[in-house]
Amino acid sequence: MKRILTAAVVLMTCSAAFSQAPAENTKTFSIGPAIGFGHTGIRSTAGTDVFKPNWNAGIILNYSHMKHTGLAADILWSMEGARVQSNGYETELSMQYIRVPLKFAYFFGDFEDNFRPKITIGPSLGFLLHASSDSDAPDSPKTDVTGSYNTFDIGGAASIGFNLKMGENLWLNTDFNYYTSFRPISGSQYNSNFGLRVGVAFGL
Image (tube, rainbow, N blue to C red):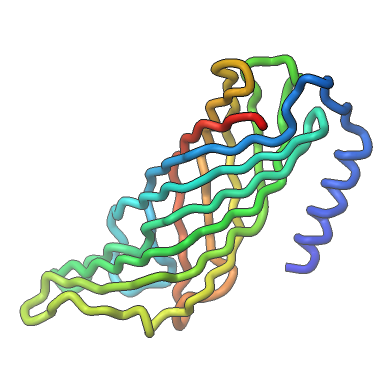
């Protein structure tokens, strides 16, 4: 973990040192709403993992003073968990998080380009709000299991995507994201999810 963080800091410092500053009329900070959809699961669960939708929505923030590098953060309400089949029955674990990905971004192309591909990487923090378990097995009512899981989750997130200029100081942000926990949420279980997030950012 320390080596990953050290490498990220060195990369950011070197990129900033050799990147070109933006033109005077280029907005360096942007903010706006975003919504995402994908698949969520938990590694090391007993049984067969099946598709469970992951929904998230919130605010995206971007800061880029250099030509190719920048920083970004999201503040999201995120619906995670897993759906597992075992012994002929299906159990669904639903977990609600406030999810805060903190990202180092690398942009391709120039400031003047309307279409700029990008890649991001960084830690993601999760704060558990609620967890419930629901099974279709007989005599298995929906149960609040919040107390069975760690209230704090941290892991690594990476994405590939693009920013598309839609107007003066207005960008469409599109990212294909992957996340995995660094620490177990309970026992030997780890969060894992991936999906598409789309947002609109307004330059300030």
